[in-house]
Image (cartoon, rainbow, N blue to C red):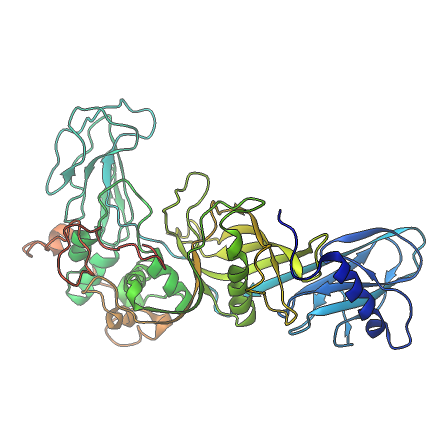
Amino acid sequence: MRIGNRLGGSVLWSIVVMISAPWALGAGATERVVQVPLGGSLSAQSGDRHFGVYVPTRFGGELTIATNSGTIGKITGPDGKERRNGQEVGLNQQGWYSFEVIGAEKPYRVETAFVQVGQSDRKVWNFYYWPTKSDAIHEPWSGGNGRVDTMRAFGDDEMAATPGGYIAPGQDIVRAGPNGILETPVAAGDDSTWFPNEYDDLTYRGADGTIYATPAPMLKYDQLFNSSARSWEAANSQNHDIQRWPGHCLGGAVASILLNEPNPAPGSGMTKDELKALWSELGENHLNHQIGDYANEIPAGPPRPGYDQCDSSTAKFHHMIETHIRGNRKALLANLRAFPPRGTINEVWNHGVGRYTATYHAIPGKGPRAVRLEVALEGNSGSNLNEQDNKPRVCNYEYTLVYGLDGNVDLNNIASNDWISVGGEAQYAPLNILQVTLTRWAGHNPYVTEANVKSLDLANGGGTGRTFAGAPPVFRPVGNYEAGRPAMASNRGGDINSASGDTSSLQPRRGLFRMFGR
C-alpha cells in the first residue's frame, strides 16, 4: 500500500479537528472534539464527550453512529443543522459532523458507518446476449473417446476437424454453414450444443434426436415484414471458432439503458426475449452511439494491494458512478470484462449499470479526505433467456482515492490511489464505464429497421395499430419460408463496416472497437 498525499496526513487531520471544534459546538465551547474515523471506531472512551467524524463526499449517503454504552446525542452537520442518526445527510454536505455521547456507565466504544447507494431512475432490464457462434457438433467436454466420429457434413454445414482423427475435449467437429442451421446428424461418440442465435429456426434437434422448440427472432420478423433478416444474419454474423462470448451484448446493454423494457404486441407472435433480440441488433453498431463522459482503457489487472497499473483509474471510475448514477440518477454502459473463474482477458461483456453501494472507510495515517471504498456495482444480466438468469451481475471492487474540499473525487490527486481487489462476479477490473448521451437505432443487419421493431413494441411507442391487434400468425420453419429464395451472399471473414469493400482479412461481423468491443 502506498503512503503519502497532499493532505498532510494525520497531523493535518488533527489540526482540522481542533479548528472545527468551536464551530461544531458553538462559539463558547472549549472542550476538545475527539475524531472518530469514518467507517471505523474508537475504543476505551469514558465520560460524556464530544466527537467528530468527517464525510468527504458532496453526494451524500447514510451516516450511522453507534456506541455500546450511553446515548448518542444530537448530531450536527457542517451546515449547523441537526441530522437524524442512520439517515441521509443530504447533497453538498461534505465536512465535519459533531455529536456527543452521554450517560455511559462503563468504558465504551464509538463507531461510525457511512454508506452511499446510487440508483438510476430508469431501472436497467435484463437481456440475453444472443451469441454469434452457430450450433455445432463437438467432442464431449468429458467422457469422450478423443476421436472424430461424425464423418461428413450435411447440407452447407462445415467440417471443422478431420474425420476419424484425434480431437481435444469440447473442440468443434461440424459447424453450421452460411444458412445458420446445423443439418448434420450427430454420430455416436460426439455431442452437440445449441447456441441461441438471432438467426435460429423454430426448432433444434438435439444429439439424441429430440426436437426442441427454440426462440427465432429474425425468422418471425421476416414473416411479419416479408424480409430476409434471418438469412442475412446467418451469412454475415457467425464467428467460426470455439469462442462463445461474442454476440449482441453491446446492443442489448444500450437498449436496456435507453428504452423501456420491451413488451410485444399480442398479435405479433413475438416473445419478450425475441423482441429484445431485435432491439439488441439495432443497438449493436458502435458507430451509432454518442458518448459523453467516460472512463476508458482501464487495465485489466486483476488489481492487487500495492502498485499496479489499475491504480490510476480508481478516481475517474468512481467519479463516473458517483456523478452519474448517484448524482444524475442515470444508468451507465460498462464493459465489465469476463466472469470468474475461467474468463479470459480479451472477453467483452457489456452491461447496463444502474445501481451501486459504496461503503466508506477512513485510511489510518492519512487526511480525512482520503478514503478506502468497498463498492458493489450492479450490472444487469446479459444471460437472461426464459427468465433463467433474472438477477443482476454484482461486481465487488475495493480501492482508495482522495476527495477534494468541494466534495468531488479529486481527479488530479491520484498518486497514492490503490485499486486493491476485485471480487464477486468480476475477474478483472472493468475496461470502461460510459455515459451514452444519444443513439441512432440502426444495426448491422440492413433488413432490421427501427420503424418495424418499434411497431411490435407496446412499451416503446408501438404495437397499437391494427396490424398486430389480431391473432398472431402461424410461423413457418426456415425450410418452408425460405424455400425458393436465393441464398444470401456470405461475408465470411469480413467486416461489414469496411468502407473499401475489401473484407478478406477482417473478423466477421463486429470488429473490436476499444470503447465497446464486440
